[in-house]
Structures are given as C-alpha cells and as structure tokens.
Length: 199
Image (cartoon, rainbow, N blue to C red; front, top):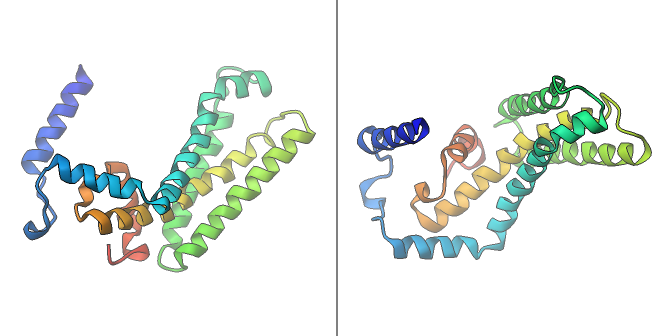
C-alpha cells in the first residue's frame, strides 16, 4: 500500500510539475493507433532485436547468478549463509569499476573501441570460468573472480547498446518518451553527448 501511494504521488508530481522537453511542434498526441504502429515498426527491425537482445542476455546472466546464489554459495563453495558477500562484493565492484572506466573513456576513444574492451572482459572471463570449472572443483576466489570481470562488461554493454537503441527509436518515432524508461534515460544521458550527439 505504501508503494502504491508513493507511485501515485510520483505520477501526480511528474504530471503536474515536470515540464515537457519536446518542442510543441514535434509532440504527438496520445493515440493508441500511433503507439501500435510505432511499436510494430520498431519490433520488426532485426537490428533493434540484436541490440535489445544484448541487454536481455546480459541481464539474464546477471540474474542467473543472483537467483542461484544460495546453491552456489552454500553447496558448491561450502560457505555459510552469512558469507554471500563472496559473490556479491566482486559483482558490485565490477559494476562500479566498469561505470568508472566507461565514464573516464567516454569521448576519449571511440564507442566501438569501448565495446571491444567490454567484449574482451566478457569473453576472457567467460572462457576462464568455463575452463576452470570443467577442470576443477569450485573453490573460493577462483570461482568468484570471473564475476568481477563479467560485471565490468555489464556497464560497457550499456554504453553502446542504450544510446544505439535510443537513437534507433528516436529516428523511427520522434516521441522518445514512448520507449525509454527512467533507467535507460539515465544511461543514455551520460553518454549521449559522446556517442550520438545528434540524438
């Protein structure tokens, strides 16, 4: 009930006090037909599915580790129920370091170079993880160390795919607010001036 009240209050505040940033001549009226045709056009694009799929599979891997944490920590690594930090601290540290690196590299090297760096982390950590677990029993440090590097890729992935999807939807719909949720907007805002200044 508290969450519902907060959501309703937030909705009212946004509706009442948040100014519309799109110029009046470029605004679209709220039309179900327009929304349907716009979504249909976006979802028919293979390029959009490739870029959105990058995010989807990335999050899938992240939440697979999260959902399997009780088994991974207590059964495979033989740790206690108060030692989940061995999994989550490297993961969160990787996300923070990846965000810091992406922020420092934005505008200094090309987006595709950033993507290449991210894929190097992803492929290297994944190969090490598979080979190590194929040859050895799960052990502390070596079994959790790849998580740190996998989650660095998590941020580099957003650096590329979010602005790319943002630009794609913008070019096809004009009304950007239809597609972007708040998380995507924040990710785009930090890199838009470097990655896609025309957006």
